[in-house]
Image (tube, rainbow, N blue to C red; front, side):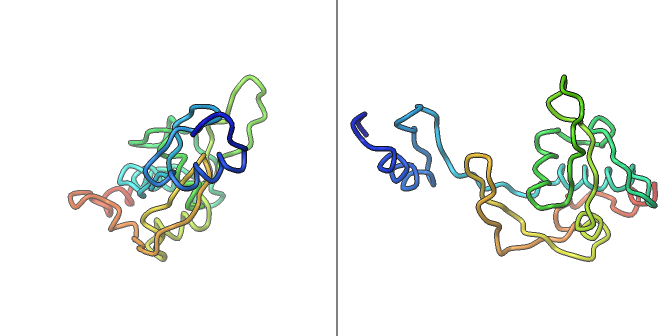
Length: 152
């Protein structure tokens, strides 16, 4: 695409190519739609948050206290509305690092609901979720002992 194109044409070009990935003609950023899976480590992190939160009030838990989790991957659980970050009131920090489990997250951990297995993202936004769903057990590896972790 040459530099004489309009913004509208650039947007159309990006929409047409974002499935496989394309370079933005305006800023040269690589643009692509990503399909994110609800991963094993995300589910284990969610269970850990559930366990660490005081069950009577579901108090927030700091990310460093959540078991077996990569912070960026864990934060993706927001897309499924399974967790919510605590508002950051410290201007010196980018985030509070504190997380709440949502009612939907509790229902997922307690095996009452299924959630979409994948979500499509583009430019930091969630586009859509898969029709294929999973329960908490299906999102965990076969050798994971759910009962043992829940009894902690």
